[in-house]
Image (cartoon, rainbow, N blue to C red; front, side):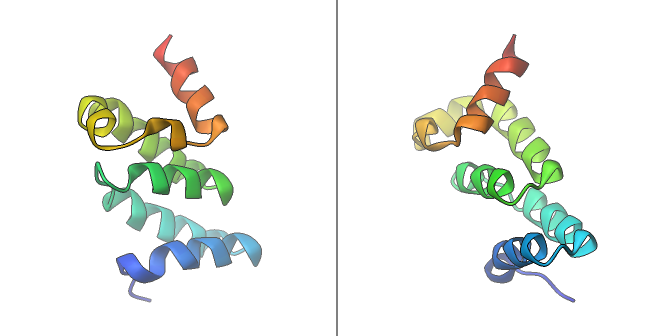
Length: 92
């Protein structure tokens, strides 16, 4: 299966719904490689919603690495409460 940016997120959702852990990992790894300043909030929220710990970790790491650019370009209050809590806990 070949993933692209249009199919990976819907497949992540389906993999959670149909309990397909190998597909879920593949989608999460792909999406983690595709993180940008402009999509990291959406990806972090999707990871939280669909229970992808791997993508959550990648998103949080990305946010810490590029926090200044992300804060300038995005409204971080749109992050899920769970992701915001995790960011706060890791900061301290």
